[in-house]
Length: 110
Image 1 (spheres, helix red, strand yellow):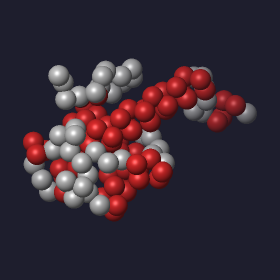
Image 2 (cartoon, helix red, strand yellow):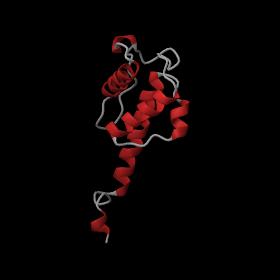
Image 3 (tube, rainbow, N blue to C red):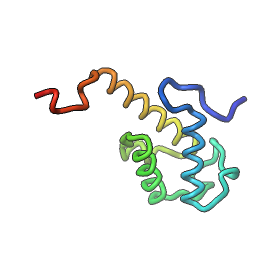
Image 4 (cartoon, rainbow, N blue to C red):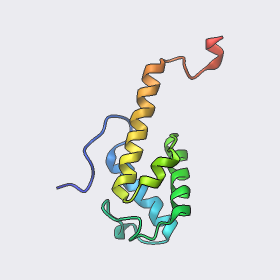
């Protein structure tokens, strides 16, 4: 059984998202990435509320997504974090597709 979640549609592979999340946590907590697994809890990793906010900011910046505060509070494991990023990317991609090709340029709407 793979330690990574099922493959998602979009530009980012789950393996890449999981690896990025693990790398961010490892850097934040100064621990080896090999010590972090998808089922590692934030409690086990000593990820506190300030760490959560910092990690969320890093993820938002990297993937150009927004993570609601309510979602940040619900994340308990690395897998929860990866799943949250995947969901936010799906929503971002769905919004971009439904908005159309010129929705990103306000000058074209005028």
